[in-house]
Image (cartoon, rainbow, N blue to C red; front, side):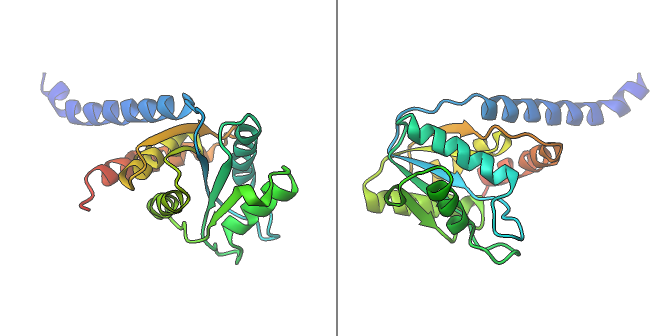
Amino acid sequence: MRKLARRAPPLLLLTLVLAGAVAISVDGLRDNAQASDVGVVLGSKVMPDGTPSDRLRARLDKAAELYRQGMFGHIIVSGGTGVEGFSEARVMADYLAERQAIPRTALLLDEQGNTTEATARNSAAIMRAQGFKSAVVVTQFFHLTRSRYALRRAGIDTVYTAHANYFEARDAYSLARELAALPAYWFQVR
């Protein structure tokens, strides 16, 4: 009985971690994209040659697919300048215009989106300035729960989600990171 009592806290913690990982995964893999004013694509790594990483390209491809389906008429691309020296937002816009034939007039750049919170805040400001009220946020599955929450906290009430069709082993680490980041967002004093 004492052995079980000593094991209970670690088992409880493990159960909570696994339940959280499953909840975030299910939420992120269950796209609910609906017709909206704008798509919001969160940035990711740009390669040293100035091209989008595979992960970023998958986000952009998903946004282009939804744009062509008529889900939204504008796309906010958000990302700061990484260690590679390239503006993620500019690289994203160039990729969408040149590789996906999205009109430049449909692309809105946020070059200060260095964090999820900054992207949400900046995208909300862009949306207010354009008169947009609804968004589809596009990122990796594990990042959608927090991204949607951040956009809502920034004042965007109608936020739908769509995950990029790209998976890699690193997603396990990223999912674990979300398990810590999401509660930090919930309890953050504003």
